[in-house]
Length: 162
Image (cartoon, rainbow, N blue to C red; front, side, top):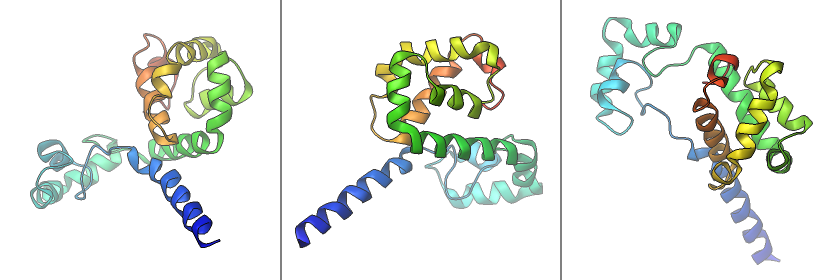
């Protein structure tokens, strides 16, 4: 009985760890000019000092520059993360087919025009093997975003493709 509880807890931890796979563009100092200069793995004290200089971190957050996201972009990203995490299995099946209601809803979280849904679905279907190569919902979402950004049409037609 104890072994099955430990196994269940271990599986739960592994499932949740997929959320940690998304690499942020900045380290503990946060977004801002310091994150560009020092990077995510650079000296975070220097990054924090640079971020605090002349309010550049505040400007980055407000304007969505310097590795920062606006509130709208952050909300869209959270909606995408939640949707993919809750619908991963269904999305896998529908993406393989290139059609489906969950896939259409995913396009909605990216703010895609209805007119480009067939392009959206086709691009994801063609890249299915690459998208589902890494395990976990956040890895899948990162692959989806990367795939969509390589299309000639979709970045301009999907307002929340961050």
